[in-house]
Length: 173
Image (cartoon, rainbow, N blue to C red; front, top):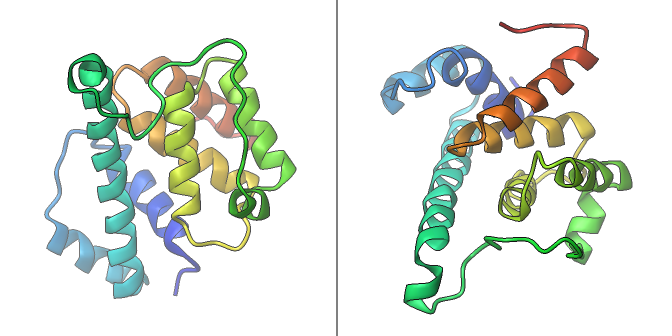
């Protein structure tokens, strides 16, 4: 048995999504394949729900960026950032995201790898993992998955991928 939903998401990303990003595999066949790999049905459903929510939030963020002025509705996530903005973490986020994880998010935002919208998507998806504590590796993987899922983020994705795999002494090409 695999440990958690993030393990399953990483497995999916490495074995299915990364190699064939435009392919839309049949969920039933994919579920069977994941069960054969040792993941439970519950973990598989939770991972699919996690990915569905990421896709939904991508659509909301895209709509908000094009419709903010016309609809008058408040966006789910910030769509722009001022140079002096500051993200305040709530108590649950502080408990689950240690200082290093929060520091990495701030660093990535200051470097321009994440903008306010993608930062909020990353934090939301980290909190959706239902882990008591989130490790630095988990933060990096979620950042990578969020950037991969966002159109126009190819350069930031490549930068993040280099950061992750150069640190591990691996190169993926």
